Length: 321
Image (tube, rainbow, N blue to C red; front, side, top):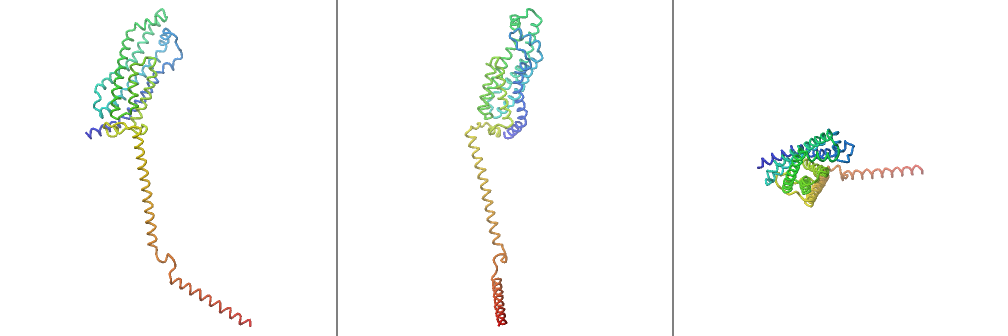
């Protein structure tokens, strides 16, 4: 078991970089794909007939927008697949059905994005080549498009599969300590939004995906503020630490560093004291105060000089007389 855990941790370290890059790129593509068409086309149609005429003229931009979102769904499969494997190793209770749901959901969602644009462009081409070119005829063509109806049902089923997969993976990832409660609940909410959000709110859902995927990228790269949970280090299910537990751990680490610094200072002071005492003990006798013989010699020399000066003064007074 230990060998498989070490191999799993080594794989997570290698694959985590690619999963983080896929997460960041998928989030950006979701947002760029949702706003690409509106940012490149300056016309604002006022009716469905004008909208179909515009789509027929801007077919390339519409296809590019759909392709970007489709690529984002494929990258999302890479991210969730990595999270699935990390979570299932620590919590085998994660249903194995989540993986095929993930694969089918992302593939169908990506195909639906491109297929929807192709079907809409087909209706727009029929509208541009038929008469009368009014709003009633445009709505009739849209309602009668079998391709749009099939793709709409397939897209709804794909969103349901992805939403269910997100819920299963995020719940088990929270319970195993792989993600925090914030990331887990955020992912569950995104799964619900994929199913219930109406088309006008797709751009908002994709924007929320951007923030969630960027958070996952930081987590996969071990750049999460305060560090990841211990489950990433041990390879076993361990609860994600709360804020109070993380603060207590930081305080213990700070105290340990302070104690270590104080111990180093005490050792340095002790070495300095020992060094000072040894210098005094090893000092030669001649290096200290002058010896007794030197003092006696100095005293004798001083008395001789005084006697010589007294005799000279007496001789001078005799000569004056």
